Image (cartoon, rainbow, N blue to C red; front, side):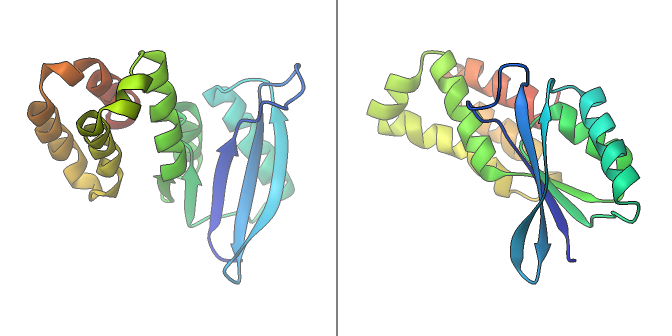
Length: 165
């Protein structure tokens, strides 16, 4: 086995007593292979820590070199605490998806669809995912100044969710 990637997906088809379907894939000979899927009742750090402990009880030698997650802070925290020397990264698809949901929640979906300049500026926030880790905060600060106060609500969300204060 090569690196193990973890990817969390929430489906609308999950039975009501559960909150999410959590899926872990591994990479073997350049192919993604489904390793584990589990139904979870919560999205808390404790839930993810319990999941990791259960996996380690079954797969004692599991030692991933890299883990890819969505941008759920609780799962990032649980995996970081358990595997402090493993490279954690976020899934760009989930970054864009959660940003779109937030735009909708803030009432900016129509503006995003009709105002190409606004949409381009929103894409700039997602592009921060491609910066070197030690350049993200500086890039975010420069982008915040460039965009100005019209984007404060969106930038505050992005900072609190992805950048950290």
